[in-house]
Length: 284
Ligand code: PDD
Image (cartoon, rainbow, N blue to C red; front, side, top):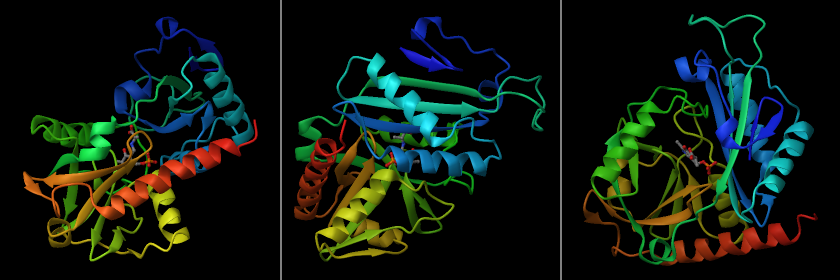
């Protein structure tokens, strides 16, 4: 079942008019929220980022957090898998094509749920390959906009090379992945790029930094140069659906020893523990 503009229905019945500004302009924002054992993970944080994205595109939030929470819980109930990946999008609605904002138009609100497929064990144990690419996106990558054409093209470069992600570089600095945030480990120190307009403030990124802080893992939040990425002992990617994965090959060359490093293995275990702890104590 999906949710579209106040109604729950089978996806086959869902229809959006072709003049929806999401279709015509990519004029909308979205969230992807992982659901473990029917509990939405970090929902409050996802809703806060949704609010920031909506403000970024000057679109009023159609619901308050209580209403979003109710809709999210209902959608989870209506779908079978215990672990789900919830996709939510708000567009500027349906109007005659004109770039300027239409007046008096209701936004289109859409939510769907898919079975959550976290990375297979083999990817966790062996790591994944990535390529680098020039970050040719706009300068508001902090907005989780549905207009993802640059990200689509960049991610495909990785897939074309048999890899899972493209690590993006802008002016000699690492920004993030095409659909993930990137961390680097050098000399036992975890390095994270600072949040800015050039990257999405990842919810998983925050969890990883909180876990580093809580467990005495040395870390620095500062710009990471391309040379530091290329000479890294470890590189990781993080996202709501991929959790934490080790990048063990970059542009065909091994990262560190070419296998998931010790700090990755520690963080992966901490992340899994944290997830379970949160789900056990989330109270419903
Ligand atoms: N993508 N950066 C980009 C460009 C992303 O698209 C994503 C997530 C992230 C990680 O954010 P988070 O930890 O909050 O998932 C960083 C989602 C999963 C997607 O588009 O499917």
